[in-house]
Amino acid sequence: MGSIITGEAVVLELRPASFAARALGLFLDVLFNMVLLVVILIGLATAGGDLDEAAMRALVLCSVVFCLVVVPVGLETLSRGLSLGKLAAGLRVVRDDGGAIRFRHALIRGLAGFLEVYLTFGGLALAVALFNDKSRRLGDLMAGTYAVRTRVTAERPVPVSIPPGLHAWARTADIGRIPDATARRASQFIRQAGRMAPLSRAGMAASIATELAAHVAPGPPPGTGPDDYLAAVVAERRNRELTKLVRQRQRNTEVGERLQRLPFGS
Image (cartoon, rainbow, N blue to C red):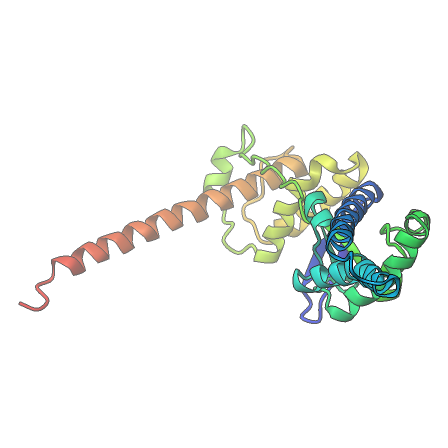
């Protein structure tokens, strides 16, 4: 996963495409372009029987340029980084800053692709992609682009509940002063704790628990571990927010019903 900070200080999490995914997308794009070229050449051979040799060569050359350069450049420009192969492989080409590509990016990629994909039978593109961290081919390096995955499996929500023995304390604890940033950090830690190394998990849990303790009163029962403490605070805060939301909706419904019973217009 790669992180990009935009000019508005927003962090974008983009996952670069793997070498295998890029190779699959490239193969499908080449297959489509070659099929299109063959169809056009068959049409020229059928309909151009009266043309002389020079005219036929010019039409063949134009067909090659159209199928192998114009079509890829046009598709990527109009779709902002997509092609049939990338769409099938779940990929999209973006700029190094995470933004959508434009015509000049697609043109550079298309011209370079004619050299590294078709003239070298894909050897140059695959060789270059093997030796950089984002599997970028030569055209990407020249245009300042790379491919990202668009099909990312959504993370399953981690169930958070109050640990046994902490229900009574959680119901009476004052947790209304917890800053939103600290609460988000605690929630994020709980979601990612299962993927962390034990030593790092213990250290971060203790650090966040200490930060929360400055805004929670009274303290938890003696012997409560940092993990249980965080789970209890996060779960109780969520339960209170949910209860507040339900009550607010009920009040709004009651107000709406009262307004409907008023004799407006009578």
